[in-house]
Length: 537
Image 1 (cartoon, rainbow, N blue to C red):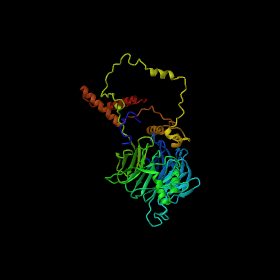
Image 2: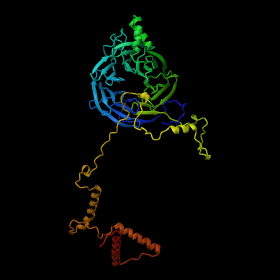
Image 3: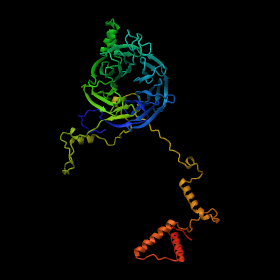
Image 4: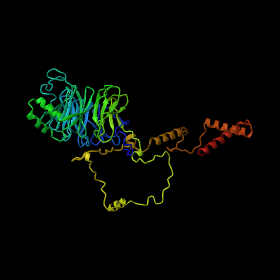
């Protein structure tokens, strides 16, 4: 990361920096620190990328699963990954060992699976055509969560309520502490549920009653985002700052209310407060995979229109649109923001993962107003005593420093933003592969150590010596290379042409020679050719 940047520039991505390619990737998820990126593929495998080196660190492949992956989710410490697939399977993996810990099969296809923030075996599932459920992977017990008020109970048949009205899949997520589940249903309501008691603690109604398609918390748990079918992204401020604070609200409202519905709505107003609404009033596009930035200052959402890869970025505080990122002519499938850096990672319909980063511009004058940028180098004459004087503050600092103290370079200080009692997995250890066997026995099938090049040379020698030994001469299997050979016709023609050129240069004409003279000249030429090529009589 380049520190010499203009602080007035927005801290959000601007251009495509790189893309990752491995099969057809469908969904992605970062670990808490953003050092590892998990991507679920269409063939049922999950690829873990080292985001620092942009290389594949691990590939999790289940031989029992060949269906497309629908969602991936990291555990809090990064040691486990929860993977849901289109074959209704739910698998918890050990990332370091590459082994399956738990695997169960659900009755419905899970569209989204999320692990509990603190319990590594408890997860929240949003099935395709039923109410959200909590699943304990250790005991394989499931609990169906309520998705509506008492006058409209949970659906008893597929895609329909008990009164015959249409039902669509719901969205759900844990809060920061994991004690509450926030469920968005198809009638425009946010239900705040205590999943341990399976009790509704509050209800927040969305204006218009639009279907809630996505619901997600910011990283610090202070804001809640909802994406509805009315093409509007709504931001709510979470008023429950402390864990189990919803119990105090229920204790205050319950004695003073006779109607359960009104009581829950009153509790909902004390839990969530509408903060912002974002929409494209011109194009009226639907949004896909909206989320917060790592620090919660930006809100990002992808266009759900086919044939375009557009990403919209809003300022959460000001409420204005700050950037529209336009990618290739491919539909957007999934979208995540890096937990720490201003980086957005998106998945296209073709299975490519695009990395959007900031286009940094160096501006030294932004840090020092009196700094002068030069177009070309200038010679600077240094004063003799310019760097001789040492300020008194520097002398005091130098005296306080003990050079004999040992410096600890092995202990890693914990970041206050990621302080945990348990050790967190940030990088995967290298898994070296053995070098391939290059011995001659394995690849060529020879008993000796001879190479193909030596065999070709021996074959060529035998071919050359074959006609010479065909006259019945016994050499005892030994090849004699020092023998006089008759030059070919081409060599004789070249020698004759050279003689013609020499005679023309000297002004002499070639005279016809006798038969005896020609034979003597031919024999001399043969001797000359043998001497040049190292052959003896």
